[in-house]
Image (cartoon, rainbow, N blue to C red; front, side):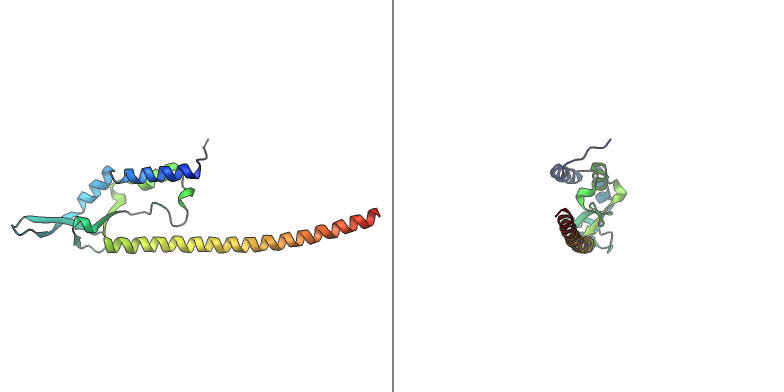
Length: 158
């Protein structure tokens, strides 16, 4: 038996799980695995940074984003369509579900995902418009038909 979770509660849980994902141990391990030497200090000590999973270049810690390999919110559905179990699994993947991306690569990936979502929502809106047009036409036809029926029934009763 499944319980229908109200949308406002789902959004609240989404926020909590997102915040928890920042402290998720497998995320930290994935970041540690991307660590590499990107240069050296003036005194000769190594300067550590992170390797971008996409462009394979080294970056300082402030220029890296830890990203989910699979989008948290699927490009073919909305957040509210996800069950709580799916939400947790998508937000808190194990180490192989994370990747370190430089800011530029992360922005490119995010824009591509958002574009897919936008085109899907545009398609849905277009479909809804078509459905509403058909519904309006059908309701007009039904109204005309019911007027004719009323006229016939009045004529038959008189």
